[in-house]
Length: 327
Image 1 (cartoon, one colour):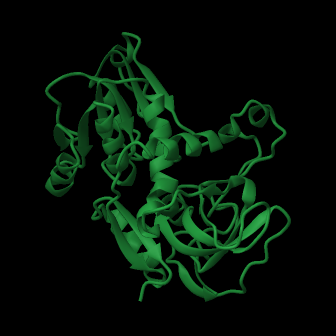
Image 2: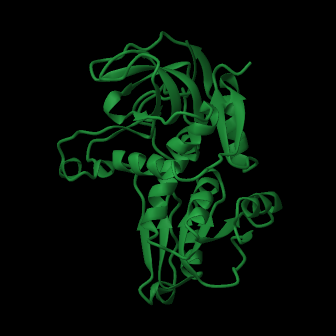
Image 3: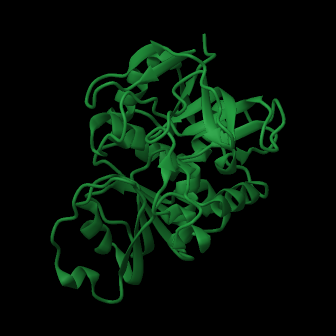
């Protein structure tokens, strides 16, 4: 099979020919039909997250077809494979239903080979049965950008005015969910990113501007999707007393010192870690009652390095998706 593998941190992925992986007990063999390109993949490739194993096939927003029936999944079933690829099932967090905080987790495309390939194997217990309808490329971003965004949205409480900093794949999905709930969305992009701001307004944001700008009113909550720690103090200055700032990324640069006055007034800073199976169940159930349209740019599998470069440059509106069968 064809795969794009990371052999050395900080270097481009290498196109490799590999044997089709053999599923172990409790695993599924999946033919990959689409795999989203996530900012976490970029952090792994660039070395912001320490390499756990090399060489490695990245990718954790996987949509595919079960290629060998096992573990209650029939041949041909369409499934999704998310970031959280395995848990111990024994630690206090797993026993409490907080498997996203597992002490001995495995992550898809980080500890386990991921979806930048024609086939992958995944633990059946961590695979998601996907609803009918929708093409695979547009479903792929829901497996991380959507799920992490949804968990972050719920972590924000019940805001009437919600700010989203970093208007990428997750924000463009959660804007649609929040607007369906009647929430006013305020989008923050890189300063001067007129295209990103227009994209946000087109999805229903009532205000869009740079992170150096102040919206016309105080916000109830802000979700930070950008991996820039310096935006945390900035966000605290933009939420009302009692407001909450949610840090949604797996990786973020260090948060600089800031005045206590920015935190005072019972403002809160919270983080979001990974996801649970309940998140997936709740998110896809939520989507049944509304229409969410993902905006995607598709790439051939062997163009994975270009997709990562475009993501790094911030030149993609919505999400990048690799499609192995794309001609």
